[in-house]
Amino acid sequence: MLIVKNESNNPYFNLAAEEFLMENFKEECFMLWINKPCIVIGRNQNALSEINMEYAKEKDITIVRRPSGGGTVFHDYGNMNFTFISNADENGFGDFKKFVSPIIDALKKLSIEAEFSGRNDITIEGKKISGNAQYKNKERVLHHGTLLFSASMSNLAAALKVRPIKLQGKGVASVASRVTNICEYLKKPMTILEFKDFITNYVIENCHGNSFYEFSSQDIDNINNIMEKKYVTWEWNFGKTPEFSFKNERKYEGGILEVNLNVDKGYIKDIKIFGDFFGKRDISLLEAVLTKVKHEEEALKDALEGEDIGSYMSNITKENLIECMLGY
Image (tube, rainbow, N blue to C red):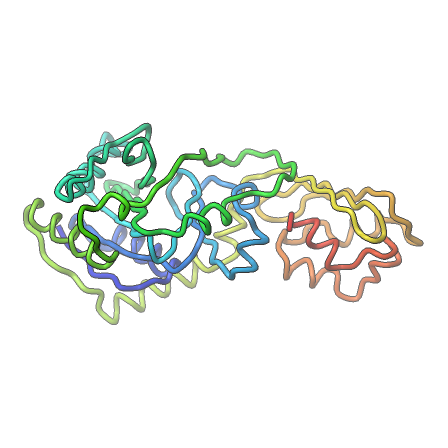
């Protein structure tokens, strides 16, 4: 097994690094990595229904989609992620317990009684410390999971606290769980970097045929190429969103504004705007301007550039309309 050294805190790079290892190596791999504050959504999820977008924007929190299924998770410098890449037959996919067992056994060495719980979690005293996900390509299975070590629970709760907007669609919703930090159960204090070294050493001691691997400059160029072409793009992170219907209502100086959207692959398929506002121009003309536009802030600003919003909705601004359309 290759023990891969990765000191990057860039969530885009780290997901690209996983893909690079998955696609270009035949050996089984193990990697630990820590992201800067970010929100990672599952492959089949709708970001808008999972994330407090207003909070993410205010705190400049990166949002990125991963290739595996499962729910949305919040990462920060107090969360450590682990990756196992294995060569497996068809039956290897979906065997979560196989991959989390080394982590659970390592925690027992720290006198922490963790256990595999439900479909894909590790818990301590019934509280979740790890969520896990997998994806398969040909004969390779990638399993990755979180390890809440000293994460900010207040930031986690705020980032994943969704506004009570009305949204229906085909996206897979996350399941709320009680969570806790591993550091609270340690007999002796340690930092997350010391914990990272501990887990690495445990895997080295308990898996056979290990060798260390550090990314070469060519590897890093290839990983950056994957990152730029995929993980940083709007098309991957939001254009993959399953079709959904969205309704939001806000009250402004000019009156109540209600927007109803159908969004497909991140683009507004159709839109209806209602409210008790006053305007000189027919609102259907504004709806036409917004149809087939990306459902994201910059694209909406560009589409509305030069439009006199007040002529459609007196005392309601372009910024008001955009925040209502995005659920801010």
